[in-house]
Image 1 (tube, rainbow over the protein chains, first blue to last red):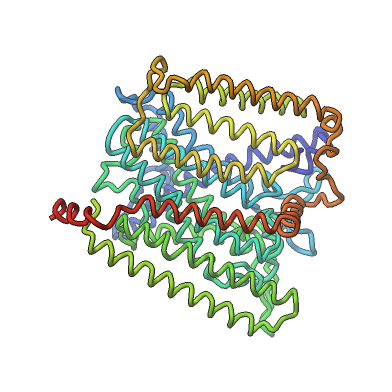
Image 2 (spheres, each protein chain N blue to C red):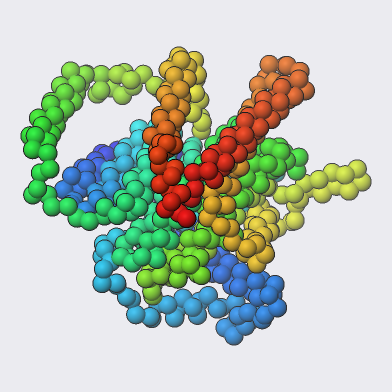
Length: 406
Length: 186
């Protein structure tokens, strides 16, 4: 039953202590990472826009988030007159808790040398540097991101106000639509890795060529990146809180600590989603190893047990930067463009690519000629794509003839 | 420990189930339903059925109830209903009879199969030597794509039919309405 950690099988005091320690560390690291992300985003984006950004609280303004948090903490907590009291109070927690839960299954470090599979020895126990390694790791991730919809949805509805409601209806439609593409692109990773557990997925990416971004052929990674950005409601998919249209979106009526929780959840989700991308496609805490004739690099930075963690953080920072970059560069999509991209491009593309990978897998298992199988699959996929294109053309033409629906 | 988990999960399920019926507000009823679904997922985990637990949360809590809430919000029926008024007169007595009948059936099934339920794995034989990390999925996949492959494929056809049917029902009839909308929009 205690499959979350094989340490708990014996229930010895030191094992319980390790698990408790891990819980505390993961929670604190999560909070600090979120605080850092808020500052990082503001600082980078101000650099990109030729501003100075936060520079008052602490060196380089690094304590700005803390100052904002204290300010929000002492603000008055408003409860709208027409709000549904219970749901209004519940919603921030429904947004906040899933954001933290994902963090618990991401491998944050570990020793991947000499076939240790990322385990480290702590107080005489072999354990992984992640809070839990459930057998259904990736599915748990999808389940949690599915639950994350509720926070935003109920926040907008329970405010008893028009704009938040519109924001939350948009949010739920968007998140449910993109969840399919998110799951299907992860299915390609599971197919290549042959396991669902996050530790297993990281272990299978033992060298640069076996990183899933290359092993699955880049397309699932791009689909996942786009779908994850939409799932996070970050620009260019931030229709949920489009300031020009919806005041502040789903959290318009929130203030004080409840607003802080939403804010925290949003940035926490960005950090965890970057962590998921690193874990799924870029080898997680696996060091970058390459061997180019004379130049040989084993990825060992001589940092002992921190080696894996340093690599993980380095990779994480790249994706955090990319998310900020997206926000500074890309204009917001129109709502119909958002839905078209999700349903008519991302979902068919991820399904088709999954079929291609599966066909290759079957071909290698049965010793068929790989190229014949590839060509046949690609021809089939092209025919499907043309059919889909023809269908959307016809429906667009029909819509034009029948006149506008709205 | 097993008992503790079971009692907690069962309490969650029962509180949720009663909430679905008693709460007069549709959104609160839907939230109670989520509580029930989570309780069932916890019970699945306690039985080592991790895959079923995850799918339960993804499909039911993550998609179906979201859709319920979405429809409730979009149609604006999110107002508390008066429970005193019974729109269909036979509905409540009928519900009571069907509920009692269902309870009787389940109780009878439990009483009949009590012996095989006491020893785990005898009634529903799932235990095997394969207890690795992905044993759940392996067993399910082997069963689904060998013994039940026909039922599996037929189900997919059924789903396609459902999708086509929905699209067909949602489409407005071409004749007549076209002139209406063009007049309305221009």
